[in-house]
Length: 257
Image 1: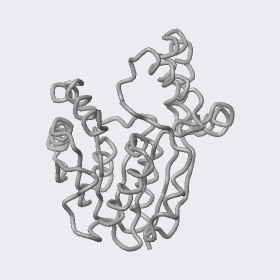
Image 2 (image 1 turned 90 degrees about the vertical axis):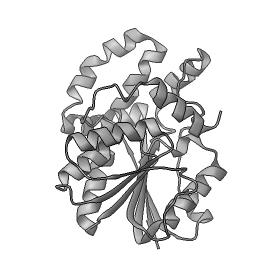
Image 3 (image 1 turned 30 degrees about the vertical axis):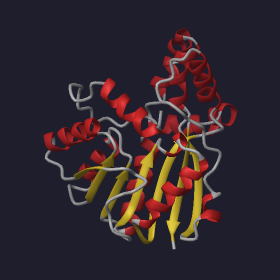
Image 4 (image 1 turned 135 degrees about the horizontal axis):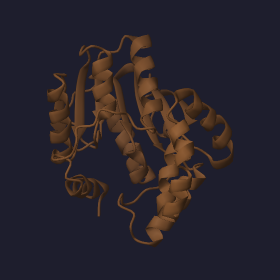
């Protein structure tokens, strides 16, 4: 099954339209949100595209942080998840446009956005498809604009162990997923890329994957997760425990020429 079909089916199965409209950022979203907020402030960014949005708590919190002043477009292949996002934004009187479209062929002109981002998208595609996706994203990104993407990291040992067990049990719900070592190879394939910086973040989310290995492990890890809700503790985890077990995310920041 194609990744787009997997996610359409996944969001439909979650009954998200009837679910709670949560506004809380999850641990894997926090470092991405902080980086986006910093990038927007430092570069006076206004036009933002969330390409392959899913449940877009990040955009919601960005719009609230910037007092509803950003021009945000939320794009996804799933009507169900777009409807969920629309309900959330409307409930809090926040502005955004919601576009159902294929990320490989987006209905926007060249050089439209100051910033394009996504989380947990590229790892579901093969390298050739990653190149095509990045080209399309950079097509709609303005000159000197940014494409920021966060994906599960190949150095996340607990995450990869849990995924391996889940796939063996045939209970993995996310289809094809290959942890990302680096996206720096894209600079050799796409001439429009000026630079790529990468950071490893978020040890905590890996603990969720202990459930696939043994539910008891996840219970035993609960105190670590509770302390990790404190931002400074989470940062200590990334540095200390991240050196041993790796982190869940690799965040890639691409700047367009």
